[in-house]
Length: 185
Image (cartoon, rainbow, N blue to C red; front, side, top):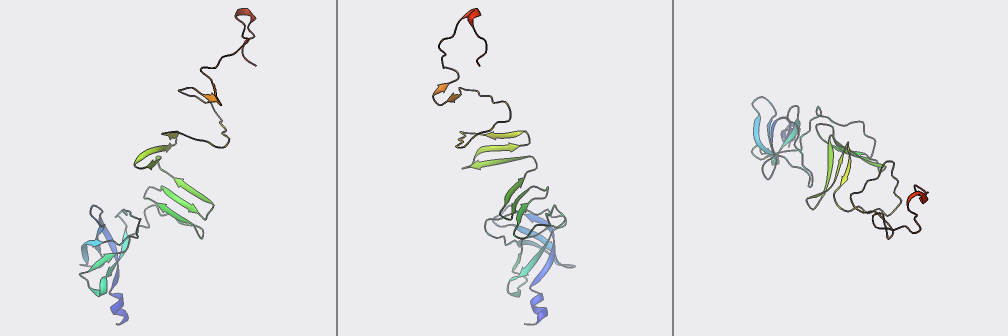
C-alpha cells in the first residue's frame, strides 16, 4: 500500500457535538469540506470516560481497514479548555474544563483541587464532604495517633477519657458555699 493509501486511514477532525447517552460515546465530526460524519464511536481506554467541551475540540478519525463506512474516533481533546501543562517527568493529572484536578506529582504528593466541594462515597453512601468551610465526616471517626486541635472542641454527646465521663463523673471532697475554692486547678 502506498504512503498516501495509509494516510487515508486516519484524518484529523473537528468535533461539533458529543453524544454520551448510549452504550458508547459518539461524535459528530468534520475532517474536510463535505466530510461531516455523525455517530462516530469513540474508543476510550477501559476505566476512563470524559465529555470534551465541543467548542474547540479535535480528534483523529480512523477508518478500520481503510473502510470509510467503518470509522472510529480516538478520545478527543480540547487544548483551549483548561489544559494543565508544564508537568514534570513522571507526573500525571486528571482535569476538567473548570480547572479541577487530581494531580499525581511524581510519587511525592497527590494533590486534589476542587472548585467548590469534594465528596467521598463508599458503596454509594457519602462518608465525607470537604468544602472551603470545613470537613464533615458522616459516621464514626477513629484516630490511633495523637490528635492536635488548634481551636475549640465541641461535642453534642458525652466525652470520655478512658472510662471517665465528663457528664457523669463525681468529685469527692467538694465543699459547699463559701468554703469552695472556685475553679479547679
